[in-house]
Image (cartoon, rainbow, N blue to C red):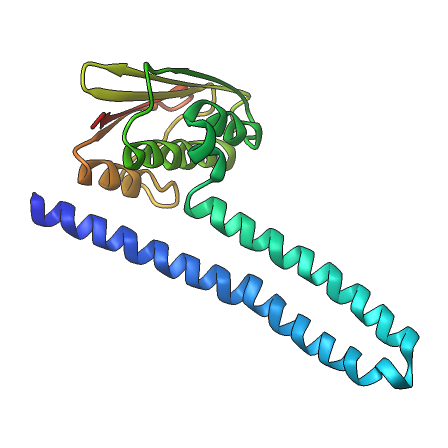
Length: 206
């Protein structure tokens, strides 16, 4: 079991690194390369055609703003600043605002859990909300988080079509269950066809 868990953690870390590398290469890096070329052309035109050079600098300025936004989005995907600064409640409310369903968030914790557990909880909710948006066709959803003894409990419910499974492809629930198992957590799924879907995750408080 330890070898399996260690393998899951290693695979997850490798997948995250590949995602970050791909996002940097295809996003901000490509945009910055284009920006450098545009500024080089603008420099050449500066004396010959100042107006054209000024227009190119304006375009480059816009590219800088887009590149900065892409880098902020990437950093948020690694570890969102709002989670570090304000904790799970505000961070999950920000996630819920981007979901297609009307989501109610309730966080009842005496204090903040360990940073690693807090991060895993955040990304677990993020994955579950993405599933609701992509697959559930739900109108409303609810997220509840509370502490019981030395465990953090997370439960999401939605009024969607149900039928979710940890053995299917495309939902990400199987990988999510593996990630939780690797940190001594577990995932319980109740999703009959026709709904509703209730997913309960349990994590060590630490």
